[in-house]
Image 1 (tube, rainbow, N blue to C red):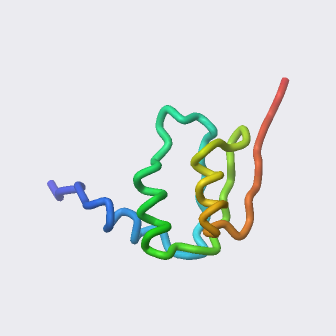
Image 2: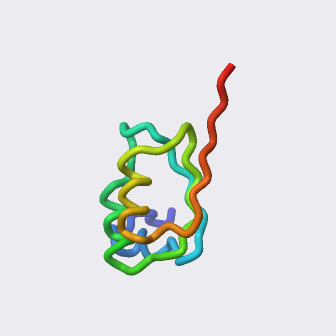
Length: 77
């Protein structure tokens, strides 16, 4: 079986500038180390979809200048 482990740098490099990211506002599994590495590597022009808004994960990307468009998804019954 192929080894699926990778470094943080390699994982962040898979997210290209202009990519679309979908993230939850739930902070229990927010990939902050990955997001910081993406910013360090210069990833820009992201289209971010915040499911039920967003928290520090999306705020961090917006503040770093990495987001071109931010969509918010929410549904209330």
